[in-house]
Image (cartoon, rainbow, N blue to C red; front, top):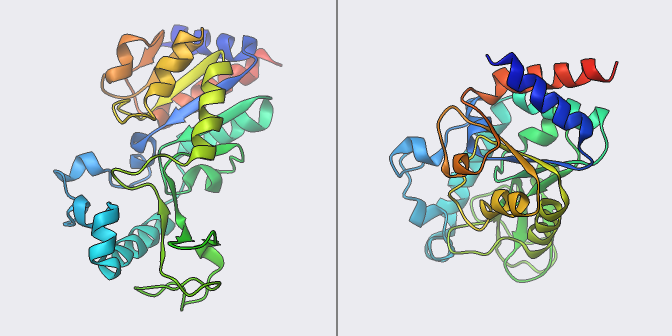
Length: 251
């Protein structure tokens, strides 16, 4: 554990006006959420082209819904880890702190974070394939949670409100993330390979606009080449220490 680098990051947090944490699958993997990359190109035996593309959904919506029901149930069984909790605490003790996440498991919100941009949607939401209706699945009836659910407004087929392969990121979330990356002066890149674009471009965008980049990942990533400070350790081990050091500066 590098106490000097922890102190450097705590000082950066103290001086920063706007801070963004960009998180990927690695932070949720510490809670036991399986990642796509760890399953040899399959999601628990499912071909992602069958369950995570518009074409796959059109061909077999029942299988796709069964898969996402299963993923949602798995997400409900895991808990935020110390990294999620440290980010939530950081938000609570300083101004202008935002999380941009590629994850769809809701663990940041469960940990207490409120300023979260979900770039790839949420396992806990559905939207209509025809009208503008969007639903929170946590408050839906069992009928809505069937293998081929219908929109309560127009009776058309509902789909998971997640971004699939070959789909663009939602415009509102993407614009908000771009603005945050443009204006932050400190960005954490946490548990992300920084290879999935356009989301990964936010790290380069922040760097180009003068932000300091702090990378937290056990292995080198595409963003390592531009990171100002890198920690080769699990986020759950280092983030609580950074937050504690930051808090001690302010006392």
